[in-house]
Amino acid sequence: MRANTLRRLGIVRAALDLSIIIPALDEEGSVGQAVADVHSVCRGMGLDYEVFAVDGGSRDRTAELAQQAGAAVLTQREPGYGASLREGFAAARHFQARGRESRLGRSARADPRHRSGC
Image (cartoon, rainbow, N blue to C red; front, side):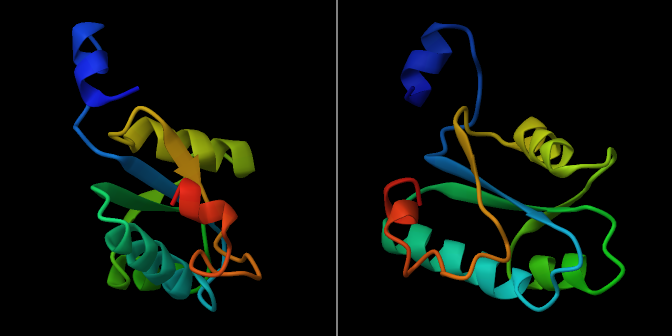
């Protein structure tokens, strides 16, 4: 749904094209590149977007590196993968949010499945 349709329905959200949620737990080796890839693809497509990294209690530098790469970092309050997605969806300003694994073997740039939804 586009922002104008949402406003007519009384649903007020910021006019963004996309919200990306990246659940991450001890992913210091990949989260920075995952965030950078998302930025690269979305900017290349001319999208107005936001990126969240949801830290599930990492014992490494996951949150720090995600923030340095340009993600807004959220702290997961409940255990589990679904809880990390819910945390991200609650913060997302776009009505239709998308999740992305931080440890995917293929980058967002190389994976055509991520081009249509960023």
